[in-house]
Image 1 (cartoon, rainbow, N blue to C red):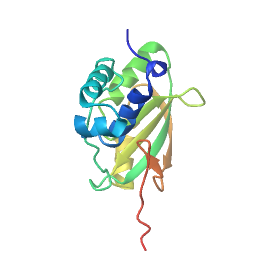
Image 2 (image 1 turned 120 degrees about the vertical axis):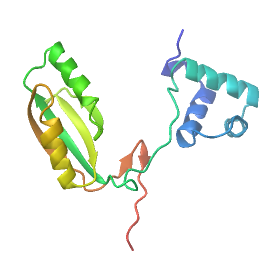
Image 3 (image 1 turned 180 degrees about the vertical axis):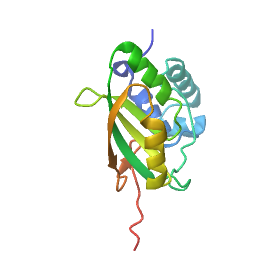
Image 4 (image 1 turned 90 degrees about the vertical axis):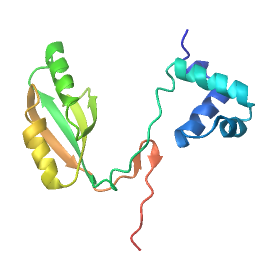
Length: 162
C-alpha cells in the first residue's frame, strides 16, 4: 500500500522538508537534523522513494544566469477540446523546450503556459513559430512577468541594485 500525505508522520515530513532545501544532504546529517539515527532515517527515505512521494533529485539551474530572464505567461484557447485534440496538443507541447510549465485550466481559456526565453524578440519567435502552430490553437493572450517574487516554492532573493 502506498503512503498518502495523511499517512506521513512528523519524521517523514521532516525528511521531506530538509530534502526540499538540500537534496544532497548526507544520511548522517539528515538523521541529525530530524532527530533519528542513521538506519531508521535511511529506511524512511527508501520508503518515501519507493512510494513515489520523493520522485527524484535534480540540480536547480538559475535560468537568469543562463541568459533566460524573459518570462511570459500565455493563455491558450483551443478550437477543439475533445480528448483526441487535447492529447495531440499535450504531446506537441512536450516537445517545445522554451515551455517551462503547462497547466490545463477550468475557466475562460484552456491552458496556461510559462515560457522562458532570452528576450522579448526570442519570445515573439517562439509564440509565432511554435506555440501558435500547436494543434488546435485558436488564440493566445500573453502576460509578461516583470519580476519573480517566488519560484519553486521558495522566495526569490533579489538584489536591490543599491
